[in-house]
Structures are given as C-alpha cells and as structure tokens.
Length: 176
Image (tube, rainbow, N blue to C red; front, side, top):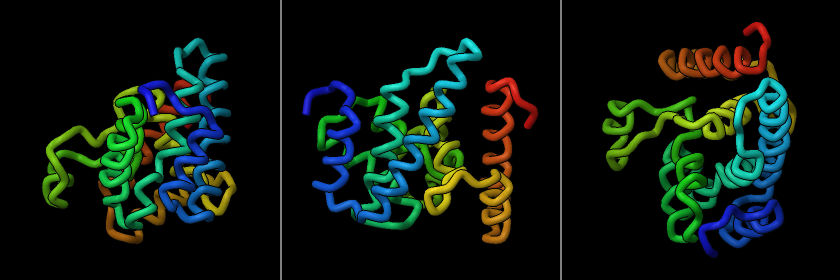
C-alpha cells in the first residue's frame, strides 16, 4: 500500500487480512463512528481536524490485537502498520491510543522502544478519547473507564483519561 490514507473499506480489509478478531473489528467500527462524530463536532467549533485520518486511524487503532490483547497491542500494531507501509500519521495513532497515553517512564518499564506514546495531534486525541468511550459497541460515560482504571490500580492512567476528557469536551464547547 502506498502512503495514502486507506479508505474505510481498505482499513476494514487490512484488519481482516491481519487476522484481527471479528469482535475487535466491530469495536473498531464503533470507535470510528464515534470518533468521526466528535471530529465533525470539533469542526463546527472551528478546530482543524482531518476527518479521513480520524476515520482510518480509529478503524486501525487495534490492529495489534491480531497478535496480543495486552497493552503491548499498541506497539505491535504500530509495527504491523509500518510493515504495511501505512502513513506515519496512522502509525502514530495506533502507537499512542492506549491509556490516554503512556509516559516515557511507563514505556521504559514495559520494555517498549524509546518513542512518544502520548497523543500529540488532535486526531490522535480524538481516536484515543473515542476508544475510551466505547464499550460493547455503545458510548459510555467517561467515568466508566476512569473507575475501571482506578479499580485496577492505574491511578495515573485514570487521571490522564480525565484530563483528556476535559480537553476534548472543552474543545467541543461543552462543560467537562
């Protein structure tokens, strides 16, 4: 594949060809739909956001779940995306979507390659946020994700999710 963004159909085909489980593909479709909805709302607030990148990135964010269901799926997915010659913007979304970002210290502790694992661009943040809000194909309150992270002892990640929620809702012109 060349360095152009894959269409929705191409992204879904890539997931299937790389043996991403059907339930994960369904999740990716739900995340993409919600991420696009958020991105369109952001545009109405005069924020520049690339809808095609949001859609393709959201569809492919869990590409690494073809190999692992651990947090490492983000690094694995980014590596797969690179071997598929996908654009760097897609690789970055895949790499940065977990935990509302993984700090340098956390990445180092997990043995990940030295890199940036915290969402940087608005598109990366939108996909990451949408992923935190989708559960069983439905949009759930952000508190659901925050509570789950706290229960599993991931207080720092819970705070990053809360911070991302505040950032996105503020950009949307809403009250967090």
